[in-house]
Image (cartoon, each protein chain N blue to C red):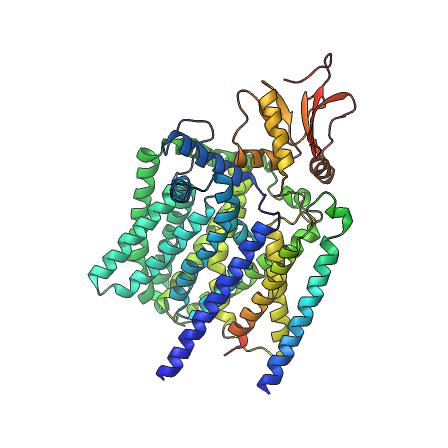
Length: 520
Length: 66
């Protein structure tokens, strides 16, 4: 008996190590794909936010580019830089993606607590690593890697605390740590903190309703409600203190949030929104088929998890009892994140918060969907051909996840890569121009790369992106800019009538000739 | 019986890896994209293949290795 338990333990450890190895491979691919020279919007934004915290020595500096939703990511980055001597680009482009592989550990711990099975937990973690949106959130240079870490740890401790209700000391320690990690989440990004508090509130309400209506879940509901409810209340208090007293820059985000209801009202009364959150599928990829192919895992996960959730609900409705409190809480959390997903679909129609809330919520919803699917498929006993098919499908899903998470330029029209020559061109443009608007490409690719490597343009210089006016006075041109413009259908202004004032072989700066009508 | 099944499974996996590896190299290292867009380096291709194999092997162990 003991030997069997030991062999199971060794096997669990081996499987967990294999999943960590897969996460390491994914992060290695993310770094290696573009030779460590990559950037995207949030990476540029957060890099600049770290830079101004480093330069000012304050967590809430008054400089342009302060991150309005929290200071946690900047504080952690600053600490790592102080201890290691790393610079911002090295930390963001090389070190953080590799370090992020460690997120699988709290994820696995949470899944084991929820499912009660080490094998289901490892399977859930494996499935999570096949979700491209999760990989992108983990590896890019944004606060989301820290948000996820805090979220997984807070939920793990919360579910684990239920085991120690009879032991006041351990119970109190667990809940204290839950609040500490919740504060970490709030301080890193108050919007994610709000989402977490709302999830706990929804789960509490759902548990209360189910407990009153269904005798089969009454006991588990009554056990879960106090812990979920009090944690939610304490989390809301921490959130309020952070927003009102500790971090004034959040006011700008609060203004945007408060504008959503009136925008929604306008959306309902006018019968349609001006913003199409799905337009990026058409413009962002070479074809909708490429997007759908790389997103297959998302759809499979969405459908399977919804079916499992409905099946469990139906079974409990007919008198079945949840196997454990972990499964009950998993069911509640899944529903709570799904509610946020549904709300975000409506909110995105208003264009608020860049209109990509559902995309971000999906990356938070997926971690609750994978354990639900894992619980069921870990008991699956397929035929040999089904086994071979599943194994190959998992392999393909891994390749698709790696390609989508790096926005493979052969398939995506939004690119992560840039060249040092392009950055040199921008440096020159900024140093040798004044009060000039310089077009730097059909999207924010180089703007973000410059923010990552250097910061914002100095003085009153501005980097212009998207569709350039035909009479813009200054343009940066490279082979990649021209190729991406052609992909996105952006017309580059005519170059023959302009002077080349800078050329490093790969990037050129064009200026309007004197006598033209430049746009300042 | 079990050994035969494992051997068959591994062979299928290895053949699939080869097919996928070759397909990726052909599709993504084409000169038309490699001249401006960064082509896949050998390290990246190696990591893709390792990712494919690892996901398959872990899945196989977890799903069917009882």
